[in-house]
Image 1: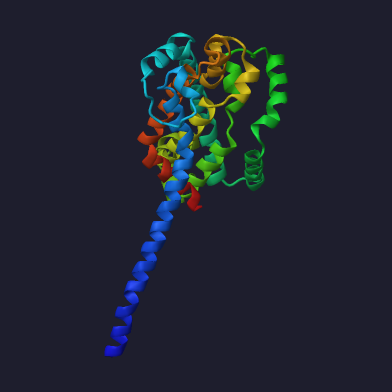
Image 2: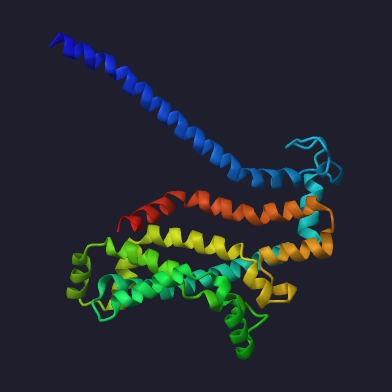
Length: 290
């Protein structure tokens, strides 16, 4: 018995050392990956603080020797209508998100909780929609927008994105995790199917709604491809397209104000993600269970 206890005692340090080594390696990989992902953003912020003479200098440094932040950020806000671009992005992203939730939530509820012929086939089409890049549909959407006369308007930036296969998929996965007894009890209380969606299912799926909102807002806030095709009026340009106009027409080779404008555009997304991080992870985790 003593020999057995001695052998167990000797084995414990080995297990502890192995677990510690694994944890150190895991954290090292995570830190390295995070550094690679954050490096462009850190470098962008660093350039936004430097004067023109230090941006292309041979020596490497993150912090400027002469701080030029006030000049760069003032130029970014005044040399081009950057606040207007950000307001356009807010209008477009908010409209797209609201319409997407209005469309995707009932569709996801039907695929998750209602029994009807062809339900699996429709869900298969949703999965196929996830595999089709939006760029493939650019030409048909452009022709449709030209024929309907909505090009160079807010409608051209909003309506192509109302139906989101990813939103339907995410909500459907989350709705399936909600017990059917909840739906049956709501029906016994006399609620209609639409009332069940908006009064019961969507409030219970709030983490999924927040997770989808972050994906939607980030994707359309940073979208350059479709706005470059759909609008020409500077007063309608969203942030990504507005920065290009700022770079070509105002900033020239002065990358300090350009990087300052990029930092201003990216900052709201970082703040929003950090504020909703807990619900974002919860929404993705619960949606992935099914």
